[in-house]
Amino acid sequence: MKSVTIKEVILHHINVSLIAPFTTSFGTMQHKDVCLVEVIDESGLSGWGETVTSDEPYYNEETTFTTVYMLKEFLIPRVIHKEIKHAEDVHDMLQFVRRNNIAKAAIETAIWDVFAKKNGQSIAELLGGRKHEIEVGKSIGIQKDPATLVEKVRVYVEEGFRKIKVKIKPGADIDYIAAVREVFPDIPLMADANSAYTLADINHLKQLDRFQLMMIEQPLAHDDIIDHATLQKELQTPICLDESIHTLEDARKAIELGSCKIINIKIGRVGGLTESKRIHDLCEANQIPVWCGGMLETGVGRAHNIQLTTLANFTIPGDTAPSSHYWEEDIVTPEITMNHGIISVPSGTGIGYEIDKEKLARVLLRTEKVTSSDSSHPIPS
Image (cartoon, rainbow, N blue to C red; front, side):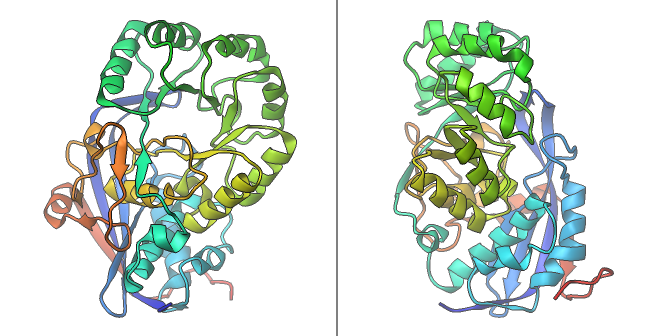
């Protein structure tokens, strides 16, 4: 393998508009500030990652502002001008910083991209992925009433999505799922609670069992593993953990405790592709299926999701829907599209897509260049 040395990092601050408001138990999003991370190696090759954050620390503790700060002050100085023999080494290079996984993933995935390009491979090939096509599901935000939700589901079923995920919260749950199941008794259907419930809601959540859902995602607290084990014993519906899983160790503990039967792997949440692969492998060894969740990514993040999902144990359709379902205009070319619920894995090197510089310019707020390893904070050796 050819090593890479990062000589420059460019932070592209952009603001992108969703085609429609997206509502979860956290709140509603219409616009998103994103920082795209471009790493440039000594030969002039570029690799791209992104901060899959929002302006508010509602999904986890990070925001776009804090990720940029961590990148500039701590993470970029750790990797710039260093010889990187393999992209998977970046994960350990950044472990001196606690958490801040989305910030870590932004620079780590960008280096995976440039390293793969340098070696004439796709990220999927480097990871050991074998799929040439991936199945796609659709995530639907909380709607104003059950009838509106049913019509949304109808549209996406007709488009061919292989799984429908419905966001729920107290007051917008049982009746909503029941309405969908009455019209669509056989579709692959799941509910995502985004930590909106507690153990006091066990009897309420048990009502979901009659709908034969694929899973209920993260019903309890964002940092909980123990209470989910208690809840899973009471439910027939499989629990899928999302926000609770930040590391390989979290996944190991959740599996050993019986806290879930499925795990959602999000590259940003777990700190990059290396940890994503490790969690995938652990789950595969323990017969725990995984799928790739979405963080309202631009085409850069979606491209990384596609590459990761080529691994064998991603047996459940993920949330990497086509760009046109979320953004008025995406920044990669070709546009990420699907055919009857299938996305073809691109054959190019790295992430397999190129950055459309004209489209990027239209959403660009500013750029910052980092060329030095200097930092106002001491970097541990």
